[in-house]
Image 1 (cartoon, helix red, strand yellow):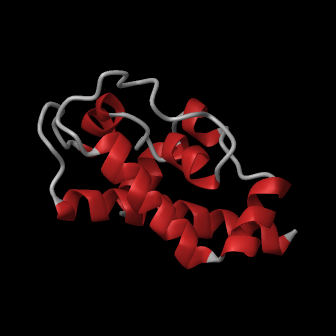
Image 2: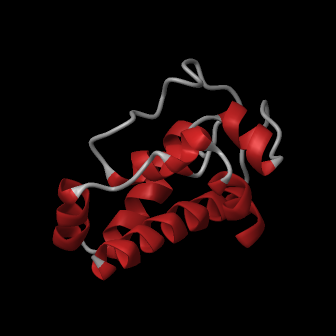
Length: 119
């Protein structure tokens, strides 16, 4: 996964995403395990299907730490997942692919938490 984070770090667009105070407060209130469950649910419902009617527009840019993480990690839509993670569009994501995406999202969130704690 370090490989993908190195590539994402070179993208001006992906680098601009950061968690804010409200996001950190939400994570603290809910706990990291609940956030991971949210990520798994969002991926299963919004990303995993083979065909998504509003692909490219199904992930909001704010209002949940997972949404922000999805944009930061290029896991926000099937086109980005295909381009950045080499998982083809047009097929339903299997459980291991869904787990991979959730792990990337969670790793990014955990990196954000560590950076915030250093402040």
